[in-house]
Length: 123
Image (cartoon, rainbow, N blue to C red; front, side, top):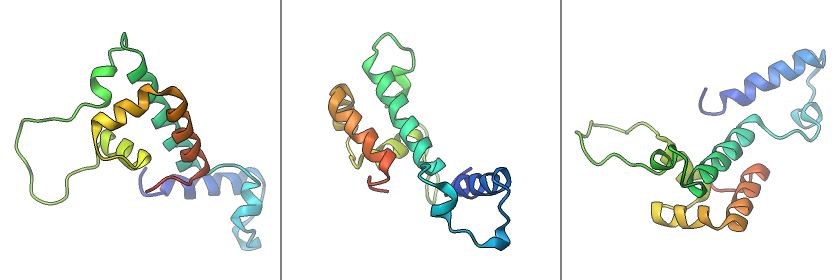
């Protein structure tokens, strides 16, 4: 799912599990009752996994987390959003070297993950 569709799906599932009809017009704040949005949870877990893979040099995924293809041909139009684009958007950094440096600083990376959890990070 993309573009926040997971939030809507989770809201519908939450309404069903709490036995709240959409006709009751219960606000989302009351429905969620302090639960984080699913999209925020997914973003936080993506950042956490990327940081884990970069910090552990013995992991095979280390070579893939910050990999950007350099060969091939370029298609016309907007290119598909890749994993590294999501990481760049989550950190607010544009340079892969800077992202790797921040990932190696454990306390700084945890702060970025915490910002992603609170939803205060740039889109």
